[in-house]
Structures are given as structure tokens and as C-alpha cells.
Image (cartoon, rainbow over the protein chains, first blue to last red):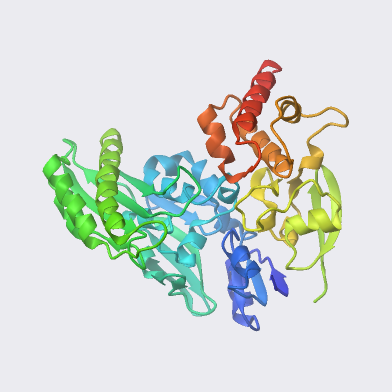
Length: 290
Length: 159
């Protein structure tokens, strides 16, 4: 692993300036659980590492406009300990928590999971189903974009030179809303998703679905939204016919690869199964939330 | 590029060291500070043999830069026993033969202690999930899980 310079700025502005002024390749270090491994195996190089964990505001989870603002340097373990975030967005947190071991959770950030741009990133589908946005800063100032605008393909993202993610923004929750994320792996823990599925629902007081969003991971180069599946749930109490339509729509949305973890046929079938199960979990959670 | 001059609190002691940017915290512990209890297994965050506590949080020291320890607290296996008095986890690992070659043991002990600090009465399932990032190719895990449960019971009784 080669790296020359290490900087740990204490403000976003200083981090932007360091990245803009860096000679050669500069890399942002958050949790480091992808970056340091990729540098060690020679897949990525860095002349300068800019560690953003000393920027206090990026280490915080706070309330914002009835929703949540999550700093890019918050670890999975910190999110898991934030009872309010878990109560509002259990699906977002359970996706994040599935990334790696307890040790990895002590460091791994959602921003890293997003920008690393693995098609199987467990943190990403629930963010997209949630309608989350990210703030990006860079030499040309700051902008806010939907989470799905960041990954552009396996290992590639849309950030320009000198840009990095500073915050995630999760919107305000209407009453009777919740979400869920499920993934399938060949073992019970510590593996990469064969398929991941997030479902985000809002119900009316009687339990009828009024809004839905469904997103699949690991079945295409980037996360796939399933608008037909979401539409099938709206206006129903997730009866068998609605769930059948959801499952069919999820399978139809898949454009997966064959690899050692799963075949095209298997991934396509499993996407429907997980969508159905995740929808039922989100439904039960939403019913319990006044 | 000159080396970084880092000051950190390691096992309760203010400690200074010099390191290159590219040195991991594990490299620093083993090669600069002669704290060789933390082991290098995979260097990719999969095996947990290098587990340490960083500001009270369980991490793989192979995935932390040495320079990141600046101003932080690091707790390693070397700080677990109090003099000749072994930690209950260490004693139960020995008594229950929860180790064979021993390479994974420091990581298991650090990770298990972190679990018991937040969950004094864990179920077997909680122990297995918490320790999923610590690999052992000798024991088959059963004796490790039992040793953690026995140590937890003893520590609860001692309170």
C-alpha cells in the first residue's frame, strides 16, 4: 500500500481545499473498510489521503425538517445505537448493518458503501426506496442529488474530481410508514448479497397502502427500482394477489449476471421471493407506527 | 515524506510513535511498539485476528491507519490481564480448551469482551453473530462459544 500524505482536516471547507490542491491522486478516507483494502491490493492508489473523520459535523446523526441528516463519517455501529433513527428507518439501518462483521461495523460508513458502487452494496437499496438524498461538496460548491444518482456502474460513481459526499438526508415520515431490507446470502452472515430487496411503505389508518417504493440490489449493474411492483401494492392491504403482482414485477425488473453466488434464473426467482417477504415486514412495521 | 509523530493512549498509557502514512495500526502495534499480541491474518478485515478497541469501538487494526490513532485510545490484548490475574474470558478460554493454535485467540478475546460489556447475558445466537468476524480454523467454534457463555455467567455472578 503506497500513500504519501495524510491529512485530517477539521472542517468541510478545509477538506474541499485539500482535495482541490492535492497533487496526483487524492482519496477521501471515511471508514476505510473498502479504501484501505483496495489500496493494499493495488486496485487503487493515493498520493494524498484526506480523512474526514475529524470533521465533527460529519460524525453526527441529527433531525432535519422532521427527517434525518446523517453525516458521511457515521459508522454502522453508531447508526445502530441511534434509537430514533432505527425507529423511523429500520430498513435503512438493517441494510447498513448487514455490511461486514462487528469489527467492520465499527468503521464502515453508508457514504463509503454508496461511493464504492458495488452492485451488491447492502446499504444502498433501502436508501433509494426511502427517497434519500445526498449532499455533495466540491470545488464548485455544494449540491444535493438523489442517492441513485451516485453509482453509475460496478466500482464507478458520478462524483467529479475533488467532490465527496457529506450528508445523507432521509425525508420526514408520514404516520403508518416503515421500511424493510432483506438479502439472500448462501450462509447466515458475512457474505455478499445474491439479491437484496428494500421496500418502503406508507399506509392509511385502516391499513391500506397509500405509497410504496421497491428497490433491488445485486440484480443489475446498479440498484433497480420496481415501480410496477410498488404500484401493485398501492390501494391494497398486501393481499395475496397484490403480493403475486409485486413478486412478478420484481423478477421482471432483474437483469442479473451469472456468477459463483447465483445464476440468472436463481437471482430472478429470489428477487420476487425477497420482495414479497420484505413488503410483509415493512407492512407489519408500518401498521404499528402511529 | 517525513514520518508522522503520533501520540495515543494505548492500554491506558500515553504512547508516542513514528509511522509512515501507509502503515496500518496493526503494523504500528506489532513492528514499532512490540505489542505482538494482535495478529496479522488476512489484512483485509475478514478474519478478526487483529481486533482491537479504538475509542471503545471494536475494529480490525489492519483497516485503521497508524496515524489515525492520533489523540485516540487503543486497547489491545496486552491490556486484558491485570498483572498475573487473567480476565475471566482468558481463564475460561484456557479451562475450556477454546484454543488450539492460538492465532485467532487474542482477536476472539477482545471481541468477546466488547460483547460482554454491552450485553452481559448474551444468547448463544448473539455470541455467534457478534463473533462472525473472527475466524478460527482449529476449534470448530463450539468451545469458544461455550467459554464466552461461561465467562459471562461468572462475570454476572461477580457483580
